[in-house]
Each structure stands twice: as C-alpha cells, then as structure tokens.
Length: 342
Image (cartoon, rainbow, N blue to C red; front, side, top):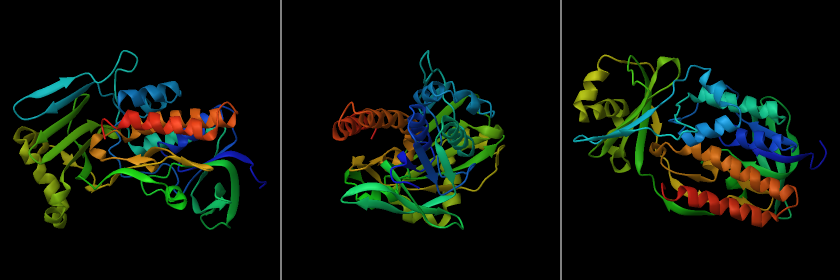
C-alpha cells in the first residue's frame, strides 16, 4: 500500500481501540484498526460499565445493541461494611443505570461499530514491529495468521493494546505515578444467584468482593485480598476465593444454593501512568494508564479517553492546533479525571 494511506492506525480493538477508530472514522478520517484476536473473544475483565460509560454508548448509538443481548440494567449500588450498608442510585437523569455486559458481547458491539463507521478492521492481525523513521512513528509491520508480512503507514499510530502495550514498549513511553500491585483479584460466573439489579459490594478486613448481573442469567462474582498475601494463597486460589465469602456469613449462606459455572480466573496488576503521546504515536485505555481493576473503572475511563483522544487527533489533523498542544491537553485532562480515584 502507498505511504500514508491511513490517517490513523489503531492497534487493539477492544474498549479503547474500537471507539477511537469508530469516532475518527465518523469524522471522515481513513482509519485502520487491527487486533491479534478475533471477535467475539473474552478477556480478563470485571466489565462493569458505570453510568458515564453507558452515556457514551448512548451518544455513539450502541447502547441498544448492548441491552438487546439481554444484559440486565443495574439501578442500585450497595456497599456493605458489616455494621451498616450504604446504597443508592449510581446514575443521573440522563444516564440512570449501569450495565455489566460480558466482554464477548461488549467488544463485539464496539468492533462492529468501528466497521460500520467506515474504519477498516483486521481481526487476527499481529503487529510485529512499530515502524520508526527519523525518530517518528510512521506505521506498523505485521501479518494475519498464516499470511505474509505487510507494512502499513499512517500519520499517527494509536496504541490501544492494553497494559502490556507493544506500542508503548516500542516507543519507550515514559511511566510515572507508579505503584506496585496492591490486590490479587479473582472472579467467576454463577447461576442461581439473583442480585435484583444491584452492584453489591462487601467490604471486610483484608477482603472485599462484589457481584453484578450479566448476560445469560449469570452473576459476576469478583473479590480479592492484599497482594502481600499472594504467596500464602497462590497454592489454592480457588479455595481462597471460596473461603473469602465466609467473611459475610449471610451472603455465604445465599451462595450455597447457587452454582459456579466457570473456573476462577484473576490476576494482579501494576499501577502506572504513561505519557500518552509522542512523535507519530498516542496511547489510550490501559495502554496509557492502568490501575487496580477492583475499582471497576477501566471501561468507563477507556470510553471517555477515546473521545478525548479523538478530539485531540482531529484538532491536529484538521490543522486547528499543533500536535503537542492538542495532545498535551489530552494528557492533562485524562490525568485530572482519574488521579482522584487512582
């Protein structure tokens, strides 16, 4: 293909990449988005979409597609501290509810949205190299499974490829505000555990867990313990996960009549910010910053940052602002939004 055929190449097509590609394509830009996996595809994620994230889906015209999959709305958040519980509505009049769609559902909707907006989507495409010429990123080199290597060029390459971002590593993106892992978090899906439209959280001494309704009449049940206890618990993760619920005996009694439908999966993640731009490149979503997933903020933050980054790229490509000015505002706005929770 000819040099600079694309205005933007987005690496990663999940909750940050597909919205960025979709929004840029809707503004008339020529966009390629690639992902090494094919969709529908699952990934480790607690997948709560808070009301502000649902509002973004509504703005993009995708909310109805998510709800059509049978994912129930969440109208109440509750936080049980043992002696007392705080509960209330999480939303606003414009966006009153949250959702917890499976990633097999949500990511597929987002990928389809990008494609329908006019972005070229290549699933099953692995990136082997980020092209850097005279200190500037100019494109990517990669291939589809079993295919020959191809080179694609663009005015900007966006890394939306997660906390272990290949794009970020390739450009040696600066990290700051770093913290070591704080939590070991694990989850599984249960049937026979109705939650009546609640995102219910239980906080106990050195334990915390939460549940939310998701697709297929299942309930996501996630929880964890301090990272300092990893060594003590890692020989029996499943047992440690199940024992955690005994910290709330009333809930543990409810759980006895439910059925665990999937294995227990989880991880512990580092906490960091990365400078999200440089010559010919930008980062969005977990590639740009990552924090403990027990906060359940990742998807809603990715949606917001996709809109912020799209605005910045548009201001630059349209000639209204310099690259550094537009991207500097993107970084500052992003950091100001997330630092209090971080």
